Amino acid sequence: IVGPPGAGKSALLNYLAMHWMAVHRPRLFIIEKGGSFSLLGQHFEAQGLKVVRITIKPGADVSLPPFADALKLLDQEDRTRLAIDQVPELDAGQDDEASERDLMAELEIAARLMITGGEEREEARLTRADRQTIREAILLAARCVRRLGGEQVLVEDVANALDAIGMDESRPIDLRDNARKNAAAMRLFTDGLAGRLFNRPGSAPWPDADVTILDVGVLAGEGYQAELAVAYIGLMNRICAMAEARQYEQRMSIVATDESHVITRNPLLAPYLVGVVKMARKLGLWAWFATQNMADFPDAAARILNALEWWLCLAMPPDEIEQLARFRTLTDEQKGMLLSVQKRPGLYTEGVLLSKAMAPALFRNVVPPLALAFAQTEKEEKAARRAVMLELGCSELEAAYEIARRMQAQVSSSGTGRASA
Ligand SMILES: Nc1ncnc2c1ncn2[C@@H]1O[C@H](COP(=O)(O)OP(=O)(O)OP(=O)(O)O)[C@@H](O)[C@H]1O
Ligand SMILES: [Mg+2]
Image (cartoon, rainbow, N blue to C red):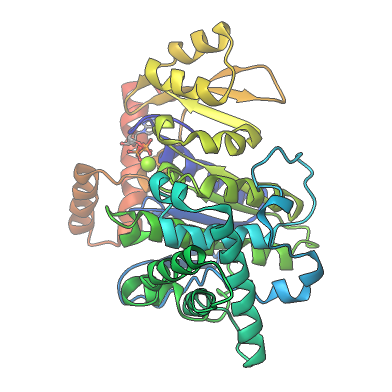
C-alpha cells in the first residue's frame, strides 16, 4: 500500500485487517509505530480474539536476539559456507522458487547492521575478507556456545569470537585490526537499551495469539536506525519461526508492516527481506507493507518491491508516481490513471490497483466508519475521542464506536457521500 502522508494507508490497513479476520481468520501480526492499531487490537479482543501487544520501550521485557538461530548452523555445517564468493548474494538474481533459506547470509547481514549500521561509507570499508571473517566469527561463536552448553548465541559471543580472530597471529595484520574494530562496534549492542533488546536470550516464545501487535516504539526515533533494522530482523525471524512451526496447519498467517519506509530505508534490510518474503510464502505467511515516500526506498529494495504481487496506490502526487516508476514499469495509461485519483475528506479516497494478475483498476476506497474511527491518530482526533470518553464516561474503545456511529449518522443525514459513493 503506497501513498503520501494522510492518504489513508493506516485506515485502509485497519479495514483490511478487519476483513482478513472476518473472512480468513489468519494469525495476524502487525508491525507499526505510534499506535495506529491499538484500538483495532482492543476491538478484536472485545470480539473474543486473543490479542498480544508488544511495545519496544526502555524497561520493557522484549528481547530479539539477532543470532538466536545461529546454533542451527552447526546442524547444517556441511551446507554452511564461509566463503562469500561461493555464496550467492541473497539478492543476486535468485529465481522466485529459491530453495533453502540461507541462514548464514542472514546472520551476516544482522552482524553487518551492527558493525556498519548499513551506512554506505561504512559498508564500502568492509572487504570480502572482512565479511568472511564475520561469518567465521558467527560460526566460531556458535561452536563455543554449544560446547559450553549455552542455548543461544548472543551478540557478545560473536564480538568475542571476532576479538579472538583479532588476536590470532597467524592472520594478516590488517584483517586482525579490522576484526577487533568490528568487535568493538558490535559491543555497542551489548549494553543499554540495545543490550536489553539484543544481547539477552530470547524470552519464552510469544504466547500463541490470534493477533500480535508489535510497536517499534522508541526505535522509530532519530538515531536508532541500525537498532530498528536489527530489531526488525529479530521480529521477522520470530514470526517466520512461528509460521514454520505451523506450516502444516490450514490457517494462514499475515504480517503487515505499517510505516515500512521507516524500516526499509536501511539498504541492508532489503536483501534480507527478499529472502524472508520468498521463504514466507512457502510457510503460508503473507507479507503486506504500507509505505509513504517511495523515494526512501534504496535501489537495493527493487527486488523486494518487484516480488510484491499487489500494489494499492493511494492518491499519489506526480513526483511519487515517478519514484514508483523506479521500481515498476508504468505505462502511460497507468500513469494517467494514477494521476486521476481523488480524495474527498471524510468520504473516500481513491487509488489504483496494480497487479500481475489483472489489468490496472481504479478503485474507490470507502472505508467503513469503524475502521476510520480506529485509525484516528491525529492530535485533534485523539482530543475528540478523549472528549467523548469524558462526555459518556466510557472506555476509549467505546468512544471509538461512538465516533463511528456519529460519522455514519452525519453522512446518512447529509444524503450525499458514502452511501452513494
Ligand atoms: N477512505 C477514506 N475515506 C475518508 N477518510 C479517510 C479515508 N482514509 C483515511 N481517511 C482519513 O484521512 C486521514 C489520514 O488517514 P491515515 O492516518 O490512514 O493516513 P496515512 O496514509 O496512514 O498517513 P501517514 O502516512 O501519516 O501515516 C484520517 O483522518 C482518516 O480518517
Ligand atoms: Mg499511517
